Amino acid sequence: MAMSKYADFDSGLKISLSPPGILQIQLDSPDGATLTEGMNEGLTEIWRVADRDEDVRCILVAEANGDSLAAQVASMSSRLLLTMRIASR
Image (cartoon, rainbow, N blue to C red):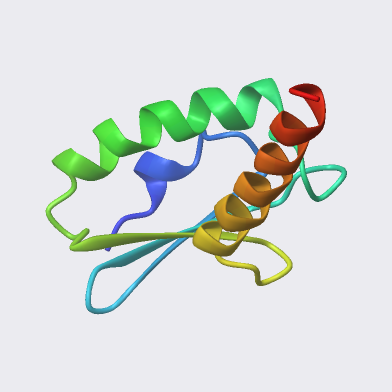
């Protein structure tokens, strides 16, 4: 499995490909919460590259500290709802 096609992505995206075709993308942002511009651009492009990669069967996105993307989105959603509730008062 050649990883060279993923070598040029932003260094904040830790990318590995393991059998049986799991492409893991770990988000290693400077402050642990914010994507850099390069990481954002890389996440946009990596889907196109992975779609053409016959070795990739699924993609797993997680924060480098181990939190899943789903957990991060859930946390962000609850903070957003709280912010919206406060702003509407």
